[in-house]
Length: 309
Image 1: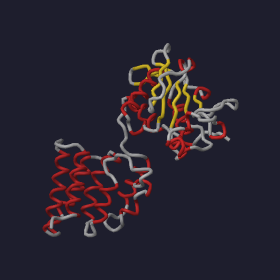
Image 2: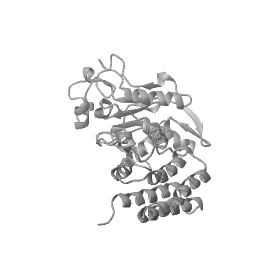
Image 3: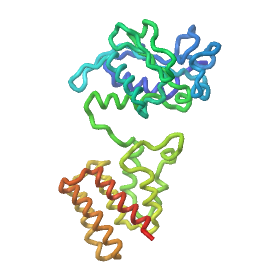
């Protein structure tokens, strides 16, 4: 029996929560029981040679899940502007045309930019229009392999909200924040950092999002068996600035404290600590952003883990 997939249900809930004036009846996934064929139907309701089951991605993901989202009219103010179904629809199509990573599961968008003419953006280039019902609602088809895998359009909708509100996007997911907080709290240098990395981050099916500190960096640190607590602490204090918005003076003091201990370690360790300290001092003096400092620290530690022969 055709049902709504978890990924699109999550997207629907986000839109109902965040889009002012959007009623539950205006955001649909599953077609009514009399409907046959198309992305609003699962395999039990498809017709012969159904257009929603011709592409390889649709055939691979064919299931009982519907794989489309209908959105009705709404109007909300954000960032000093009024945002409506037509302006949102145009924005979604622009993302599809640009082939942004969070829009690549979209097969087609049937919409109206002005309430008078129906248009269709089709990733496969098979159609350019739709019926007049799309003057007041927008239809988005999602490749079936995406909905079968549990994906929806939530990241795309979250980015839309960030853009119209003029907010600064968070580069990290809640899971990544949780991991960084745990890392800061643990006894650095004595625990294998790889044990803390969520396994799904590095799988081919669900790659890690683009974040300031990625799995590759942490693998580099973990692979350095000789890494000292000071090396990891220097990095995590800078990360703390990004994850917790900690006081800059406290960050600098923490790294300076490690720098003061350089004389007690080997010449190599002392030189490395000096580089780390210089990087953070540049941040303190306004000569580099926090992101740039993290990149420099990563490069320093990577060089320590792979010294020239």
